Image (cartoon, rainbow, N blue to C red; front, side):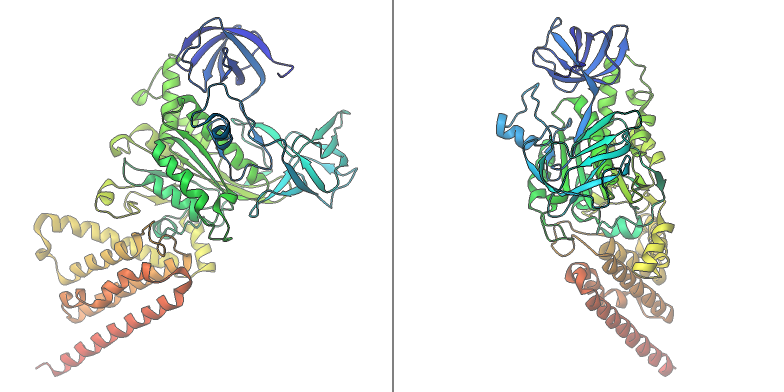
Length: 599
């Protein structure tokens, strides 16, 4: 028990909202409720009474039972041992719970997030010694957390002064002191390899920087058409069955972020089970080792207490910021923010707060903005740089993008990957709607693509989007009067757009070759489809019947290139492009000869 803990009693219970008489408690302080010691958090104060939201079911709890204030806010434990773990919404390790208590989490169960008995090989920072000035973010040393992640031990925020002593290299537990820091007021702080941090408080940094490089996901429709920068804010809205979870899982599996944090917030149990079962088996494409060595999962299914849903997002964000402070590029995926917002709505309703749009509280927009604003690329206190890229799934009822959560999210984020039910029904995956989606990062991403891949990326991307826009207009005409009303040029436009859709935009997550596409292969594929369209359009102008072009075998071959050539076989793909150019040239020459012999 914390020496600053306070004891009181329960006065009233309304679902997850519990009123306790607890003099001296502070807003945001953690509380243990009832004989079972359920976890909760004080969210409002009324004199010596506090309104507490419980993170566990209050069934069976009675007024008059004890309530204890713990003296600190809802916090996460940060230190070596986080990677590869699976936590619930308030950072309890699910694998340890399963070993200790079985398939269900007993109420009031308290298990440390990190193993305090495990030893770690600590390597002190050679540049530091007694008398050195240290401050928040100073690297005291490092620990090899997994084979893929070096865990840098930092001076926690809020502590600065003179290093009095630092432990020599060796093995230590998280409970052992590795450094003493003396402050200007004569106080000495004993630092360990772990520390706690309140989840609702953003971790500080030196300054915020603009993003400079895209987050490469290996998904063509995302990287090529609607790029997301490292440190950016993105959203994946879509109706039920459109593939939000698969898109987020593909980003988690294949993105070039160094740390992946996946938060399953209020999703169905079977979807999270699929994540929990498949992720430990996945191989990291960057290192060839297990993906879980640089991945952390927060699992909070829809049948778990609703209030823990809201906490799970903050838990994931705090851990993401912690690794950002070490200088890592972190991607955090929240699936879904709609379920998170529903938790806010339920709690606000039980508190009797005035509802606004569709019953959501008036502070929905500000809470959403506060969450997304914790993403960003920053300069850390040790003059390094790190980033948190936040991508949230949104589940609008009936696919209505005008509902409050989606509309507010759209105003906040920078990349909007809108999923279409029509595309999903047509088995076009990922079902990203190229008309309703947008990215504010195209200009910055274009600089990276020009330097790293090809200077023509921005031009070819714009040509493809223009072709898809013309296709949308012509498709409406076809639906009204039929394809016979179109000219050969217009029919070839439809064929060119179909090549882009099937040969570039469609991508199978289950195909071992096509599940990931490197930036080089993405551009060559796009360039190939546009080359076929451009050369075909020239032939149509010369009078070549469009039906003859549509029956060319090379069109079918081009559609299969995405799964025929691996990302390492880009040269073979370029060779096929040359074959295409040669075949179109032969057709052109043949029709030119026919024109010469015509009477």
